[in-house]
Image (cartoon, rainbow, N blue to C red; front, side, top):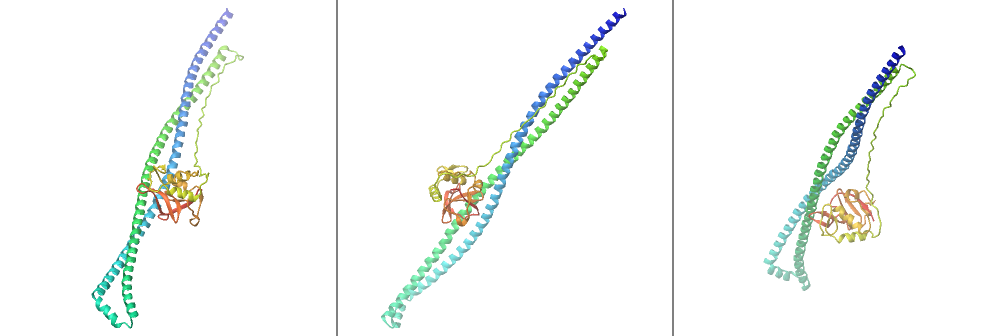
Length: 399
């Protein structure tokens, strides 16, 4: 009877242990299922964070590049404003020269009119006096020749003063044209500045939006990490309770409790970065500087087109120099700023036809005699100008 009671007790304990084990197992499975879902969500968010960080990094690189471009544009505007101030001084000086030349011409003209009037009114008496006071026929001829030479001198001097005044007028016209071109360049640079500032502001707003998204995603990731940690602790606790219940119900120190091992998952994110570099100008093929300059001159009169690279349909300043050199198999960077940093530096005294004359925000091709051919402005197109019409940044040789 006693043995039967013991068997019943053992059977009851066994059933209780199995019930506890089944209950614990069901709870563990449920928690593990929830944990797996949380881990999946965590991996998704970490991938999202990685993508956001990559996009933010790309935007930051763009902003840095745009800031460099804006800085260069501001420098170009500053230099151009200095050139405009110098041009105003030159125009004022030319106006003073004009007023002086005009006054001299008018004074000479009035003097000549008085002499002509005097000679006309006293012509007869003057020639009779010459006849009476002459010592000889030769002396008379000399006096007549002198009077005629005096009139010729007056006319010649007046023509010289007229020519001097016209030269000043021509200089004034040239200076005014150069000023107009500089103003047009300044207007374009101001437009570039406004555009860059707008783009930079938009990009920074996008970066701020990415920061907000990243902050939200990281907060969610921390929540899932916290849940997973709590679930790992719950699973560990349930496994320990199941082990103790099994040991207690069996009543034997030799019984082995089963332990489950939790699984941990980790996620790794990897970012990819891209780097871009500007290739320096490479020289290939032949041609020579004089050939480059001669070829460039063929396109004088063709249109200026912002962003263009066509020698016939239109090019901007750097597009023009690039296209001309490309005809000879010589590669130039696309922008004026990059062209000022490529090739080989040449001093002003060593410049030769075919060299690229670089200004702040502008370039042209030297053709000799202190002149350049360049795509100037939309209103003036491709033309020949004095190379010193504005401040020179440097001279580069690519051939």
